[in-house]
Structure formats: C-alpha cells, structure tokens
Length: 139
Length: 139
Image (cartoon, rainbow over all chains, first blue to last red; front, side):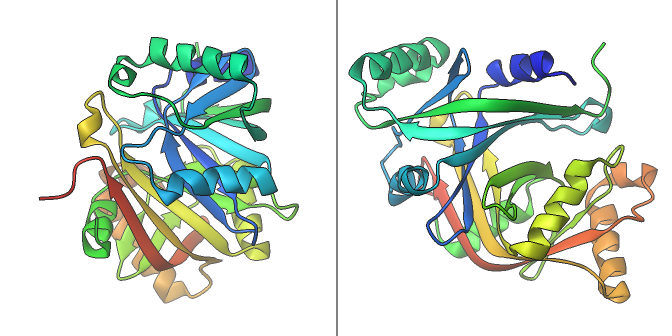
C-alpha cells in the first residue's frame, strides 16, 4: 500500500491507537479519537472522566516526543485485513489558534463531542511517515 | 474496572495492538491476533505474507522486552467504550513444547488459522499487570 492510500485510510478511521514511551523507556498505548489535517494528527485529552492515563501520554510526549499511531481493520475475513501506521513527533498544543482549529476539526468529525467541553489539553502529532499493509493489495 | 474484569475482556477480544520499542527508543505498534493462557499472551508471526515488520517486533523484544498490549471496544455509542491494557515482558519462544501449546491455543481461537502453517516464530508476553477503563462502570 502506498503512502497516499495509507494516509487516506487513516484519515477516514474513527479510532486509532497511540503508542508513547515513558521516561524509563517502557511503551504504553491508548485508543484515541483524532482528526487529521495536512500531516498533523490532533487528539483531545477529553476523557470521560479525565484520568491519570490521559496525563501520562502528555508527560511521555514531553520527555520522548517520538510516537506511533495505528489505525486498522480487523474482521473475520482475513483477506480484508489492513493497517496503517503513522510515525511522528508529538507536542502539546500551546498556540490557542491551532488549539481552536483542532477542536473544530474534532467536533466536525465526531458528533459525540457535542456532549464534551473539550477544554483540556490537545495533543498534536507531526507525522513524518505513513506505512500501510493490507492482506489484499488495493485495487 | 478491576483486574479480573480487565483480564476477562482482554481474553475474549479477537484483536489487540502490540507496542514495542526499538533499539533507538522509538515506539512502534502492530495489530495482533493472540491467545491468552494464564498470564501469558501468545501471538504468532504468521503474516500473510511475512514482512520485515513481523521481524521488527521480535528484534525489538530481544533488545527491549518491555511491551504493552491493548484491547478495546470502539463504537458510536461512547457510553460503551472500554479498553484494557496489559504490560509485560516479551520473549520469543524457543521451547518447542510451549510453542506447540501456543499454536494449539491460537488454532482453537481462530478458525482462520486452518489456512496457515504457523511455522514461524511465536511471541510470548508474560503479563505483569492488567489495567482497564470503561466509560460506564461494569455492573
């Protein structure tokens, strides 16, 4: 799967999993909702309720900005399996204009966010590489 | 969610995502099929076709055995969201009896493996901690 197709499948996914590394070098991961604009993935720390887990991912990114994000399709038909992985650098948004834009994108993608204030931190990931795999080559 | 419930939900999931860390300290992740027995997660490197990605996860585990594995439920109803994360140490199976047992467990869980030789490496993860989160507390 080429980078264009990989990015397209990632963009239209509703959930992804974010892997970060803590200060001691151990990986952790959480599911995220996200919006993609250009080569930036945005994800709000909005949880439901907020937990220390939410803060852990931000703490990790501050110490070790290298992250990976995975979107995939799983189902009983293994000929339809695929996954796409983004690699990049994470940063917590401190620019208010970019933060507002990120929240706008997230609200546009997820009607569920109508019930959420989205007043917490927003994580941005500047993607440096897309990689995709599919069991069946794209047509 | 307590550890017993977390482990139960993980065990009955059909797909999970594995995060490992490479020699330079960067995280990576891939979806995995797996079987759980006791506190050991087994996953076969069987892919379809085999790729360098498959070998990367083993190389990572040899250098940095700390891994994390996530199973989750995502859907439009955000009150039903949950995830479970296992932390542990990864190792490539070199004991033939354990390898055969792992393959037996995988074949029992996934009828799709009837079409696969499962003659490649098997990754084991000795779980040291389960952690779960759910949007709605389990009844």
